[in-house]
Image (cartoon, rainbow, N blue to C red):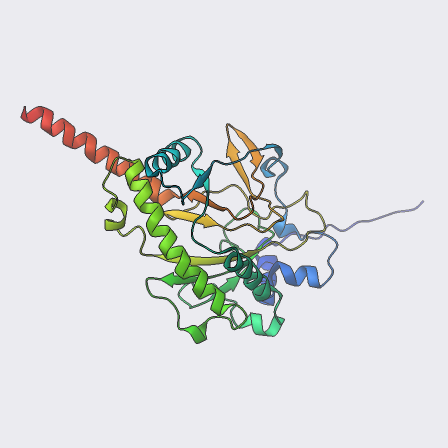
Length: 294
């Protein structure tokens, strides 16, 4: 008679999360170590894995057009129907866009010990590098590393930024502030407001630079680079590399958004949506008061 026994290793999620976090090397560190299986902290429930069955071509809006009324109308329709659109002729040279992507890549591929100096969960630091800002609260970690800096209104000192990407990070951020100002003016007009309305609300005063890295995954069917979410700012300006990977929930199905050369993806964020809802409520209340006065 042969007796066999098996031992099931208990899963202490908090301990595994802390062990991963304390390496300060992120997902890239796992890949560099040659792992062949995705750690349990990254595994999503099957129903949360986004399955794209088709692709969608987001509206492309030419910001260089001399027909401003047409540009404003296209932004209004795109914002109402999808919440995203693409812009071209946005004033940012292709060389700057390319070097920005290269700068983000250099940050994530730089010497591990140098990169560790930026690893933190303290969002007040000039540069914060980590894996998953919500590592300890999300149901499953995303297969992603990121670094970010608040570039406006009070940017870090130049020497506080990473040497491998500081110059292009500053240059790209300056372009983004100008583009953001233009977009907020156009969106204001699309709402039937004065061009400076959203600017006067200081929607265009803050800027966060975020550089994501999605390392190659040995079991991509078990995890995701980014789970379902909305962006919590006013506007997100997304610069994709040629690998793509962006998906959006459109008409109750996940669809791929392939990159368009030279274009930037604009996403209407939660704060802007909330501001617009508040504006509509105020307008309705003002109209009601006027009606009562009459």
